[in-house]
Picture 1 (cartoon, rainbow, N blue to C red):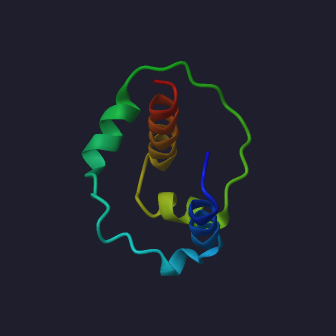
Picture 2: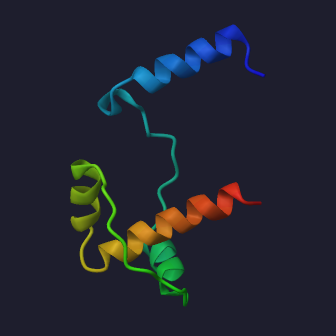
Length: 83
């Protein structure tokens, strides 16, 4: 259970524009990490997915196989939340 102070801090962060978030202490992972995950054999299904334009633009800007990188990020999220 969150305290009122913790909830207020989280609400303030959630309301913060992305441009104001300081990512300087977040570790940068090399593309090789994401590409290794993307190369693993998986049963993939074609779907239609609506993504924010900025998110799609970012991944397209990373070059070929950007869809595999999106999948790798989503897979990483699933693995982190199912353990």
